[in-house]
Amino acid sequence: MGRYALAIVTLALVAAGAVGCGRGPRDQVVARVNKQPITQRELWNALEQADNGDAGRRALDALIVRQLVRQEAEKKGIEIDQAELQERLEGLKDYVLAGTGLDFPAWLQRTGQTEEDVIARLRLQMLTAKLVLTDRDREQYFEESKERLKELPHNNEAVIYRQIVLGSKQEAEATYKELTSGKQGGADFAKVAEAKSLDPISRTRGGMVGWAVKGKTGDAELEKVLFSLKPGEISKPMVVKPKAPEGKSAQAMPERWRIVKVEKYIPPHEITLKGNADVIEEWAMNDPRYQLQLQDFFDNLRAKADVEVVAPRYQSLAEAYQQRREARQRAAAPTPTAAPIPAPQAGGQVAPQKSEAPAPKVPKAQGSGK
Image (cartoon, rainbow, N blue to C red):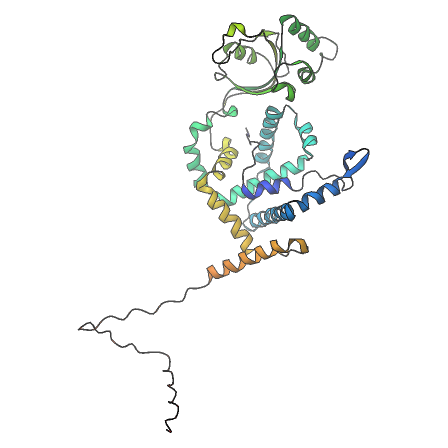
């Protein structure tokens, strides 16, 4: 089961992932100021010129690197298994839901991406990992990371859930009735949470709390309810045990009730390298031991590439690529072999060495008349 984390993992691919998302028309209106529009084209131009053009150069470099990675993978015959790619996409959807409270289509719309954008980014990251990490690297890192892997939600029995926190039993019962009655199955849980919940953190995400791992929440009663519900089911109101700040009595805390809804159930499974390949790749490529290896990989790709930068505004980027090529050529040039040091003769004198080159002519002294 894929568990691709939301954190983007590699140095150059972070920028590459941000490029190409949101493929709307250039004249699409992104904002209005007193009814006067600001278009996508204007926004892109502003981003391109930000930081004296550095943002544009970084974005162009990221696009170049993305192309170089694809070409290198094609040259070496590296392909991505479509089933594995789809599995990672499904894992990403879980993290999107738990982290934002949005289902995948809503998240794509909010972030200005398409599913094809995300798939292309995942494929690029998978290609890079295959180019940089060896099978031995993966196996070794997996063995080192088993204890950390045990803590991941997807390697445990877990649920993704929402909650609505209310100030009294009466209000909680009324809200429960609102959520469960009616022909359409009641009111939308996320909308009610945003309108009513007293929890300032989860209410902004439609009541989304995130992951609950069985045996690790510290609340046995809550766990009993969560793991008795099927996805889509809503609990009856339950009292929240108050947790008083240090130095204060829990009895002085105001009464709180909550209603929870399970969005997804994750069954436990055996921890294997194949089942955690995405996490192992992410962790390894963010590990200092592999960061130099990764950076060297990107530098080598840039240095051996024939990159023509056409736009005048990005000529400094073209110069940087040329400098890399020249440095690589100098490094690859054969080093002249130094002449051997003559062995001393008896008495400590160094034997004269026969020269392969003709002796230089000594000019005549001026005014000698000879």
